[in-house]
Length: 121
Image (cartoon, rainbow, N blue to C red):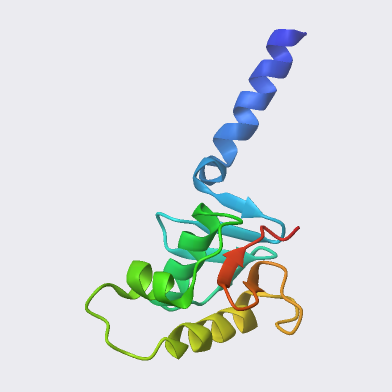
């Protein structure tokens, strides 16, 4: 009986090979290698920079990053724009991945500090 159950589990795993590559947070599924994010199993169209922000924040879950730190990590050292670019990008990103961007579950703000990823908790 144990062998049969083991074979069934193995077969189910073979039918969904992408699950191993996915990072799942509530309704959000991130496929880092494919540069794809799904919300409720629907593909969300993101820019490269929006995707990089989600991937970076999710990889460093619950750690708060300032605008300057995000500019350095995502935009790169050579970026000389306004730090408010981060706010604009986060606002667009929330509109795409959050159920209600006014009360976000995934990308949260720590007032006067920065942004962090909560995992939908």
